[in-house]
Amino acid sequence: MKRLLILFSTLSALLLSGSFCAGRMNVPRIGQVWQEKVITLPDQSVPDIEYYFDAIVKAFSNNVLQVAYNVYHEIDVESDPNCYVVMDKRNGYMRAGIAGEQEGNLQMCYWKVPDGRRIVGIILREEDSVIKMFYEHRIEEQSLKPLPQLAASIPDAKRYYIELPQKGKDITVYVRGEEYQKVGHLEWDGFGGFDQLDLVMDRCYYNERFGFTIRYPFNFTGQGEPENGDGQLFISDSGLARFYAYGGYSDIVMFNQTLREHFEEKCQGFREMGYTLDDTFIYDKEFYIIGHKEDTYIYKKAIIVDNIQLNVVISFDSVIADDFLMMAHQIAATLMKR
Image (cartoon, one colour):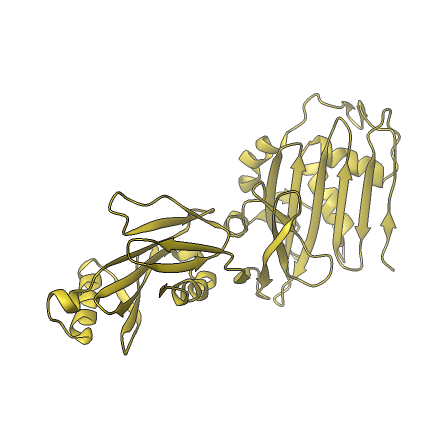
C-alpha cells in the first residue's frame, strides 16, 4: 500500500546536530560539490525510496532536507513552519514541502534499469535556489555515483518546473508562471537516460527579411538578429546544442548550379572542415547533411524556394547525440517559407 504521511509540525531552530543554520549547506553550495561526491550506502537487500532519501539527507547537511527528515521520522523539534512529506514506497517516489521562514521543497524518485542499475533523481529547492541531481546505484556496489551529464540534459530547474514521475517513468516540464503551462515531457529510454522527443515546439521565430519561420522547443533561447537581419542563433539552456536559422539568395540562381552540384559542394565543404559525413539526403528542392568530428555533430538542412535558400545549421555535443538527433530532425522539419 502506498504510504502517505502528512505532518504539520513545529520546526525551526533545533535539528539533530543543534542549531538550524550553523554549518548547513545551502543549495548553491551543494551545486558546487555534488558532481564529485560519491555517497556510500549502508547494506540493504532491497533498497526503497526511503533508503535513498535517508542517504541523501546524511550526505548533504541542508536545512530543507533535514526538516523533511525530522518530520518524516517524527523527531522532536521546536518551532513551526508547516511541512508535509509524501513517501510512496510502492512507486519509488517521495516529495516534501516546507512553508514559513524556511521555505523549500524536495522531489525524489528512482528508475530501474534492466542491467540491474538504478537511477536516482533529486530536485531540491530552497527559497529561490534550485538544484537537480542524478545518481547511479549499482546494487552490488554500495554507493551512489553522480551523473552530471544526465543532470545537464534536464532543463533548467530554476527556469522551469521539473516534475519527477510518481507514476510512470517520464519527467514532465512546465513553464513557471501564475499558471504553470506544460511544455513537454522527457521520455525515459529504459537504459538510464531520457529522449527529448516530446518537447512541444511551442516557440516560433519569424524572419521578416526572407519571410520564413522555424519552430523550436522551449529550452532554446534566441540571441538576437544580426544587422543584416538574415536569421538568428538559438542556444539550448544546457549550452550543448545550438542552431542558426537563416535565409539567403540561392547559389543555384546566382551561380547557375544544379541542386545536385550545390549539394555536393556543401558536402565537400564539410569534409574539408574535418567532418565525417554520417547521413545525407537530397530530394526535389531540399537536402540535409549530417556529420561529426571529435566531440561535435553538425546537421544542415537547406530548402530552395524560388530564388531564396532557407537554411538551418544545428550543432550539438556528442554526449547528447543519441538523444538529440531526432530533435534536430524535428526542428529542421519546421523550417518553411511563409
